[in-house]
Amino acid sequence: MSDKSAAGWDDRYRKGEYVWTVKVNQFVERYLSALEPGTAIDLGAGEGRNAVWLASLGWDVTAVDFSQVGLDKGQRLAADHEVTVNFVLSDAVTYQPDAPVDLIVLSYLQLDNPARATILDNVVHWLNPGGTLFVIAHDKTNVTDGYGGPPTAAVCYDLDETVAAFAGMEIAVAEVAVRHVETPDGQRDALDTLVVARRPLRDAP
Ligand SMILES: C[S@@+](CC[C@H](N)C(=O)[O-])C[C@H]1O[C@@H](n2cnc3c(N)ncnc32)[C@H](O)[C@@H]1O
Image (tube, rainbow, N blue to C red; front, top):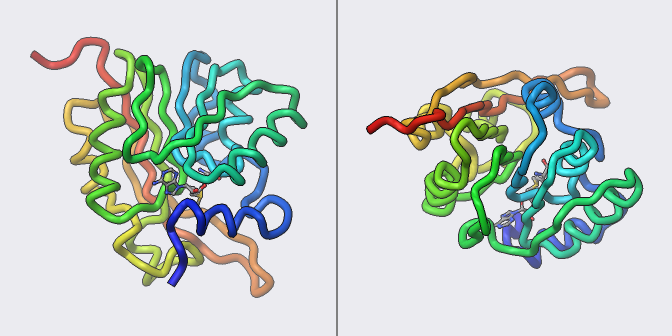
């Protein structure tokens, strides 16, 4: 059983170079490239690949994670790319931003309920009108039908549950996305929950 605590993530990040790729996630790149830069929060930012990419496009990014070792590596990645990111050590469940933002990214922040539900509920309230909420995560179906990711369905996302959490938002994309992974045994497919939602310019009365 993997250790999902901050100390467990610190240990994982201490082992070797970057645990994840330093390249931006392919879905983040595909769906967020065309947005006008503003303020953003990357919640569960890890080693900072998505936060650094956003900052390179001109976003004012706050990268939140409860692993100091992960954030230190993110800081190094930001320096390597000559960009500035505001790295914040915090538990994603209790974190509260100082002000609403234009973009929130959740990238493979795999948590059990009720933590997952709390976060999905919170982030809706952190967006400016017209702001974008982007979720990419290992989908529940990946446990039985996909490659890699956590072996436990409880920490994986469910598409219907995620969309339901964003009531009142405009849902631009909601799908179980196939991510091709190159392995020593050839190409395999991983299954990700992908949701892109926008807060309406005016909330429904
Ligand atoms: C799979 S990694 C993804 C990192 C990054 N978003 C990416 O896509 O490369 C999950 C990250 O979530 C962080 N995390 C897990 N639970 C957390 C919590 N309760 N509060 C803050 N960060 C958390 C871990 O420290 C880890 O960096």
